[in-house]
Length: 114
Length: 116
Image 1 (spheres, rainbow over the protein chains, first blue to last red):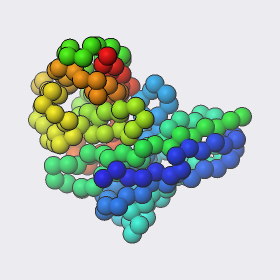
Image 2 (cartoon, rainbow over the protein chains, first blue to last red; image 1 turned 30 degrees about the horizontal axis):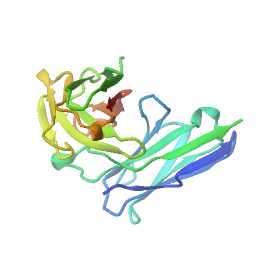
Image 3 (tube, rainbow over the protein chains, first blue to last red; image 1 turned 30 degrees about the vertical axis):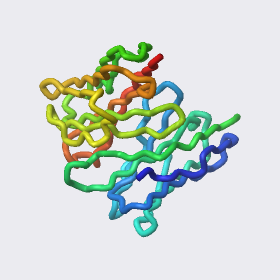
């Protein structure tokens, strides 16, 4: 089942902060965050694993609440380059045949103005 | 290190024709994934190769879609015959072996397919 992202769109001025949420109704093993600019490949930002491990970008932080099956991406002191569509991808199984299969949210469009 | 590459970047075909999309993963990556994004909707999983074997093809929409991965290197996705609803952007992604680096997936730029 597709995770739900909120908000659908955010407009910021440079230097402002934003939070993007990703919620699932199913138990998750990991949450992956990507940013895509128009016409380009989605770029990996962060992975959060069940149990608290994470790997990702220096200037971007995220959290994973296992009880709520919700992840939040925190964008602080936003820059113009942060503009794009942010996707969360959820992975349900740690093993088995479906490892790595990501189910994506519908995306959050972030626009940063000067 | 070269990233994931996809060819062609755009393809416009008529309904009923055949199209073959190609993906070259990052060298040494055993896992190769195909995803599709139909306009305005989310990115959806199509299938997953581990080397040359299909690990999971649960997302393939129907038997008009055929994916192969010759020798565990590049992969092709053929649509035959194409229908209007096949239009969208087809992404390929690759990752290293199981659980090596948290299964971080590197995406290609996608192939935009338009079926008229």
